[in-house]
Image 1 (spheres, rainbow, N blue to C red):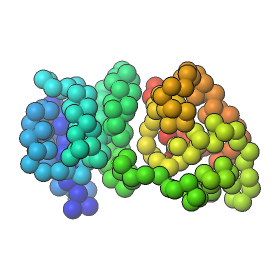
Image 2 (cartoon, rainbow, N blue to C red):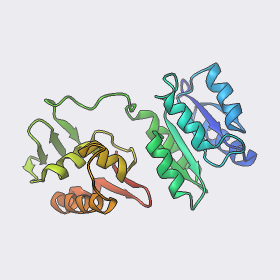
Image 3 (tube, helix red, strand yellow):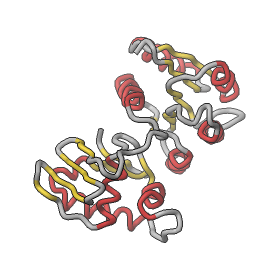
Length: 230
């Protein structure tokens, strides 16, 4: 991992130092910044492979910086892991809907930090298209064929409704990514489809029930949404 550069933007010096130390031990090149403005300077000078971004920053907030990075062509594809305090669920949802890739709640262990960073770096970028309609997706024991609208678990078909299939396919094409209910609705039905958060939850319950023991791969992220286990 020596060729990967991580930019940490965190205004608490002790937390920044701890994250810097542990990620350096993992073999990453690590850059630290105590404010969004300082982080932007590093982003202008070079392009890190991943940004760890505290949401509660003085001056320019972490959410505003996330919006700026995901809205600029040069930085839009850089994975962002938001670092949050407890009770910031609304900010987490907002950040994910802006394009952030994951989040980490304080306090966290060095092992969790390293695992989240490693997972984010190995995932496909959001600008990489999902498999073509005529190609099957193989993940865990499942084969998901978008052209046929068919799901096989160890060779056995799973009978899903149209919406259940598309929810599963959307999550499975980005394993590990956390998606809000709003993002799931937009991906499956389009922005003009009127549906509530509760309706998404109902689809997930139905999916898990029909998938049996394979339903464990659809994980609930409390207060945020869902992801497919990577």
